[in-house]
Amino acid sequence: RVDAGAKGSDVGDVDAFVGKVSFKVMDKSKIGLFASYIGNDSAVLHDAETGARTYNTLDATKWEIKKFKDMFDLDIYTMGVTGKMNISGFFTNWDLIYQGGSIDNATYKNQDGVSSAAHDYDISAFFAHVDVGAKIGATKITGTYMYASGDDDPTDDSIDAYLATDVDMGFSQVLTEGHATTDDYFTERPYILDKGMHLFKLAVDNKVSDKLKVGGALLYMMTAEDITYTGAQGQHFADDGIGTEIDAYIKYKLYPDVTFSMNFGYLFTGDAMDYFESDLNGSADEDIYTIGARIRYKF
Image (cartoon, rainbow, N blue to C red; front, top):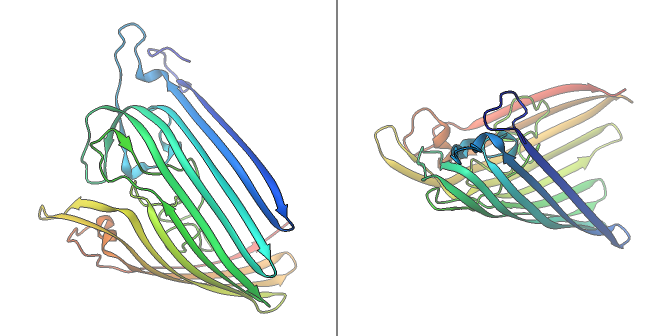
């Protein structure tokens, strides 16, 4: 731990611990338990001589632990259960996570700029995911549901929004890293802002030949809690609709180590996406689409 008056990039202690154990229930079926802890007693927040505390802004638009750095005192634990099963072409994968702990020395500011008084916050958040599907010949059909809890009140002393540490989600070609060129994407997280998410997805993948694979998906997405914001004329808006998305892709193996891929995604935007537009009128004005292609050489 470095003194509050010290200078330099090394300004605090950050600890991270992860543990996991899994059991093979039957052939091609497993169940596992896991837990993690992240702790950060940030020295820059305390003056050892005077006892004064610094309260930094916990910003809902930067809702990921890796973005907090040394801004807060963190004590965050995550525990969960995961499993998978595959029987005669039928398969399921699932995860259930609870997140608890605290974030201290913070002033919580939501996406509309509403701030709480300085608080020490208790965390109580959830994440859940399940895939259910079947493989029929060369075709795989998968139904997916994903839930991340959100926070609906930045002025209280509790945080109900699930916090990812550092992830690279690819469930959507428009919003996340699901398209062929993933260097430009809306978010890497399984939620929007601190409002969580409900995701419903139906995907179909078909191996046409040893060289060609095609697929498509239909998604419906909404936030777990309303995105609230102030319009251009001072109106107050609240909505949870992210929208309906259609995705498609093709992969073709040109040579044993060379693959061509092309992806397409189109999001029929829900009104909650109006928050991210320049004209805040309570209604999303533009649908979003993305097209990507790549040639990958493995060596």
